[in-house]
Amino acid sequence: MIEKNTIIYIAGHNGMVGSAIWRNLKVKGYTNLIGVSSKELDLRKQKAVRDFIRKTKPDVIIDAAAKVGGILANKNFPYQFLMENMQIQNNLIDVAHRLGVDKFIFLGSSCIYPKLAPQPLKEEYLLTGALEPTNEWYALAKITGIKACQAIRKQFDKDFVSLMPTNLYGTHDNFDLNSSHVLPAMIRKFHEAKQNNNAVVVLWGSGTPMREFLFVDDMAEAVVFALENQLPDYLYNVGTGEDLTIKQLAITVQKIVGHTGGIIWDDTKPDGTPRKLMDVSKMHKIGWKHKVNLEEGIQKTYNWFLENIENFKQIRHI
Image (cartoon, rainbow, N blue to C red):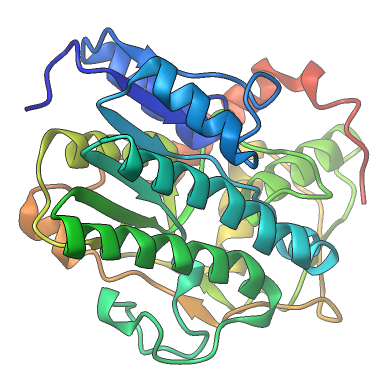
């Protein structure tokens, strides 16, 4: 049974997703939350992870730690995206199993599904086709984490479950244009162009791919739902079940930011997967559904960006 004094370790608690989970649990009255920075604990080092879990004795581990980034970062650092993510998750999963942690929540990404899988993406499409080349290294790492949790669940009957979110955004997002995802990158580009006499904004690709976006606080709600319930299956998609084109997203962000200049689409840059819409019927069936619509979420994210803009001024551009 999960109680308010259950000891819960959130790996990656300083990141966008981890911090949202932390805030959610605090609001709900959970009192025994554990979080340490990457400087204090390098999750890539097996012995350090083992010693930490042995010392803190968590009842639950939520793995929100990962090396993440957009198309450019994945293209430039394939080995790090594969190996470091495998090291982080494998250390946490294996140590959790060996030291008797009975509940483990593993967070992945919709990029685990084949590039040309039928839409919307169902959980059973995993490993049925080739991955999208622009993020296959990260996807491969996450797939190994899912299968490791499934194996432990199957062999040892432990409550190890994997949640696969669609594209996440929100407060505490990454706005570094060298490594950010599309939505926070747009917010920053449109804001800076607005400050620069509404200069023209150049965006990557054709703008035609379709994407689904989930506000990070809704993702946190899904994680807490998985924490407080024993989910009957090993893998669940988490999203809105709704998508739009990147061009439609750009127009929405532009409107919320208040930029009135033009947009140029650089179609020499890659588009990525044509469409990635999640089938979230499994989560709906067991009782979870998102609450924050896209415009509301972008407005909240932009407000947070403005409140913390001094932290982004030193981050270099591309």
